[in-house]
Length: 173
Image (cartoon, rainbow, N blue to C red; front, side, top):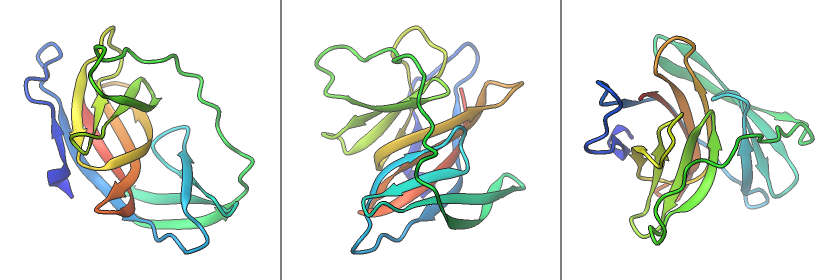
């Protein structure tokens, strides 16, 4: 899984070159009756997964020693959706072919369908600044920055080789 995520070549922010590391990945089994239509969180976990059959589940995991373990899902009420209140992030140059997916904690996810990947931009910038790429078809992004360092956790929900997957990354910018 780790080979699907990479810092954009040449990324710099001051002295930082950034880093991205997979700390947890969970494959979610869809049923014939239920396919994912949305996902959200106020941080990077727990995540609410909403399916087209009207069911919602909370995905939780234990963060221990820098790794997410014991992923588990439990049914929850679908009426507790968090409403995004972020301003639109800086956009790429016109004609880039990138489509905006969503943003969280100032990170923004952009779909590059031609290349078959997702580009995630660095938070707190005044211009479009790609931080890392993900070789997955992403439908949602969640994040939470660390309180005392330039980084945090970013969770992407999407498809890896056609399978619904939730991936949480440790990211430095």
